[in-house]
Length: 196
Image 1 (cartoon, rainbow, N blue to C red):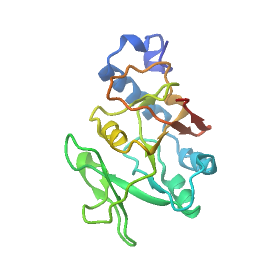
Image 2: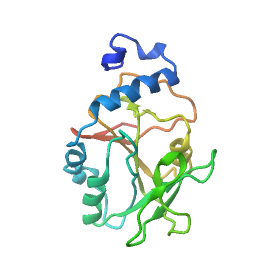
Image 3: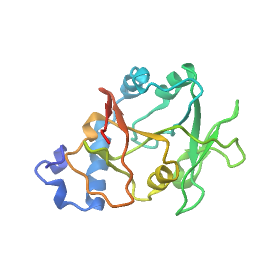
């Protein structure tokens, strides 16, 4: 089982630690950054089958993360409501807030744009989840803080959809008992569901 990256061309992912995998995945994601990605995934918005009125937890792309901005606009036009995550503590789940008209997200924890604490709280039905890598079982490699795993565990009824480049797929990711699987991944090639 191999990571499909030039920097780890023949290195079995089973021999790498999560920290080593993060280094490889960061480098690979930077190579995949594409100006056309946001429009490509937005074109697949209907595949998500999100009902009007559903609350979708988005995120503001940071650095070379796969950008869901145009997808969120398409989902809003289709009647979804969008909320954004806010870090409230090192070992806490994320909180989600709607953005009042005329307001913008501000740099918060780790320099990531997030809502203000006094903005309206929301409980998402669907979470769009950033990632460094994913495998065919639905495991994702995050940044190591555990925020999304804690959040997905707390929102056990919510659907988790990873947002990433097709090139971020790897054959195998190690996982721990607390690692939550994604329900699906949306890339520029469309939606892939992960069987449960």
